Length: 129
Image 1 (cartoon, helix red, strand yellow):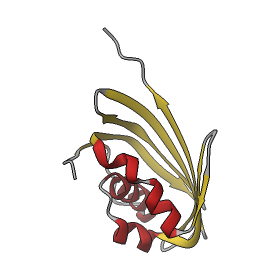
Image 2 (tube, rainbow, N blue to C red):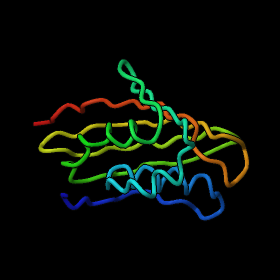
Image 3 (cartoon, helix red, strand yellow):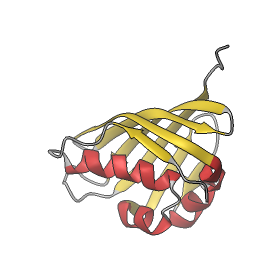
Image 4 (spheres, rainbow, N blue to C red):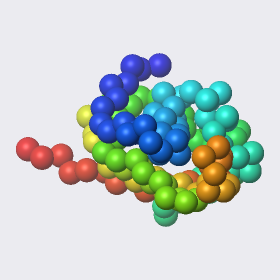
């Protein structure tokens, strides 16, 4: 597996769920399947904008395979409120940079809630000359 440089905002330490979605995002890019399974509800769904829907740990983990060649990850922000949360940033794969946004829905508003649903938006950035 390629080593990934991770940069950007970390949690302020006052929001366990903000830290959870920040770490979950990093774990996805690092292919940390065991850690991901602990944070996702068993029937969690991931919906790719304009694309497929993946349901359950096994399907979600297999859809992360294309992230294996990512060389850098930048998390611009991670925040939550109630049962919702979001992370946005960018990542680099080969010579191309992509912007992303992840919208999370938790099983409850409690601090130990698992992730029930993730909506994923990814856009290829223009290469500037």
